[in-house]
Length: 66
Image (cartoon, rainbow, N blue to C red; front, side):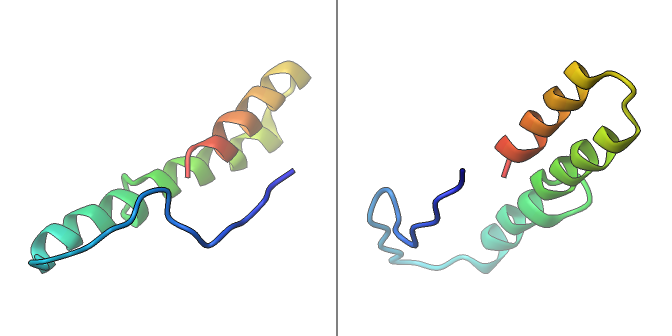
């Protein structure tokens, strides 16, 4: 179902690193309001969902975010 390839879609060359900007980007992924937190909330809510169709929807949303 999932295939992992450790390869970037486009080559990245960083000329001037900016730690403050990097901190903002990382917080968007792993912070309390980030993508990872939202994905885990969708996946955990699927276990209390009484309807199979909506359970599948929450699973699809939770696995497609990160």
